[in-house]
Amino acid sequence: MSDKPQEALIVLGGTGNLGQQALPILADAGYHLVVFTRRQVSGAPFDHPRITVAKGSLDAPEFIDSLVTTALQHAVKLRGALFLNGGFGMDNGIGADGFTEELQKQLEMNVYPTTKVLSRILPHWAANGGGRIILTSATVVEKRFAKGGAYATSKMAVDSLARQIRREYEPAVVDVHVLRPKFIGEKPGQDTPNDLAQEMLEELQRRI
Image (tube, rainbow, N blue to C red; front, side, top):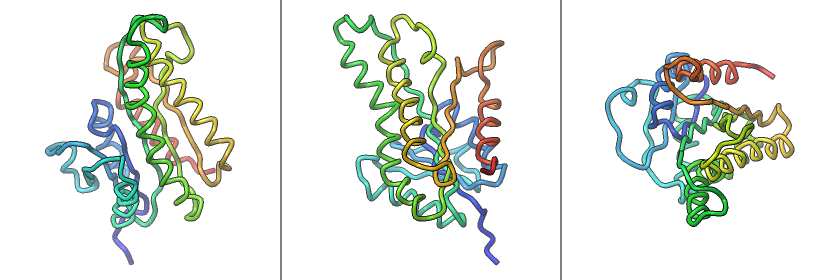
């Protein structure tokens, strides 16, 4: 009988503040995590026995395929993909100089990594029993956010991406959940990393 964990997760954004605090919670729940990084990382939480760090470039489809392969080396199935990308920036409005450049920057942080990975993972799930996606949007998509339009637009694109996934895949094949934190932190009124990690766990463990 295999001693592998039953399920693995691929994680983008795992080296950020939210990711680093959420990773041990998810690993302690029994998942094996394959954490993407562009740069070398070490120490806690990356030395957890159920966390594997994968360094590479998402511009290489074969590297994304290797994330899936690595996940399946450590677990029986790939349960989910978590996109905790949290790029943020300010601007002077759509009519100001530099807005397009800032929007491109925000899309490169908050949207393009997700679509690159999904282009390889969704076909895998369509052929191998399905999986669950967790995307990170923000409450700015629902209200006025002065001088942060590029950031807000990139998060609106995350919401649109979730809707499109639901249109293209049945929930039993690919299910998607969107996190919408206000501000991530420990102060009153903020969304704590622990609370967000618990929300992720509930979604990952929910059976359709």
